[in-house]
Length: 150
Length: 150
Image 1: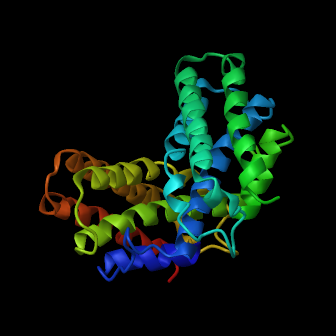
Image 2: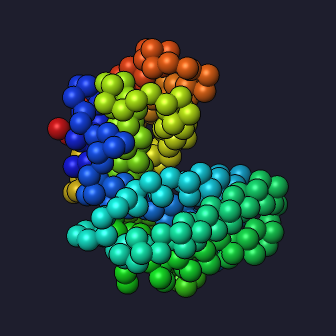
């Protein structure tokens, strides 16, 4: 992860970058999608802690987390490139074999997280976001069960 | 990175999560900010490849990348928590000693990347985004030089 960061940022800044949309390496794609998922997990985890009562519900903060997840849900798909299901990845080869199904599951996550962000905008209590939070969480779980190792 | 992802997502889904806004571990904070920076680097790198002529300029795609970076620029700051400048990190202790300066540098990055996203919305040529792209890249470099190892 750090390697990609230094290579690509340093590369850009010196205008010596070699990464291109047509020639992204499988390793870079894996690290990219893992990074996106990790940023999602952090924000989702904070909302989860609110739902469990471990963090006080703060409407503005919760809405921000929900907005973050909705935005980020749009980013990871481009990291699931052909041939990137071996090596340092928990993503299963099944993704490639069932690409349309995988994309549909991703679209569900995007839809439910967009709804969560919408609901959170006006919610004044934890109760008001609870159902949509769980619906969103289910889309994570539903996809991971089939397409993620462990 | 993968560890955080599985721990926190699995935790949320089983409602067994222990992460809280008040009790984020230094290791988790480091991994979070690195993940944010990596997602930024990916998107920035793609724009850099366009600027170098390695990828054809596509107004819509470029605007999306610029929007991604502007959004993501808002996320990493919360990962720079107290005491998280040792171990698996390239972030220097100087961040803690010069917190206000570091925050100001981060704000510059946020501002310039927001401007880039704005310019990119209506740009029809690579030329039109060039100057603001370089201004944004300078805010990365300016901060990394002082606060990032290597």
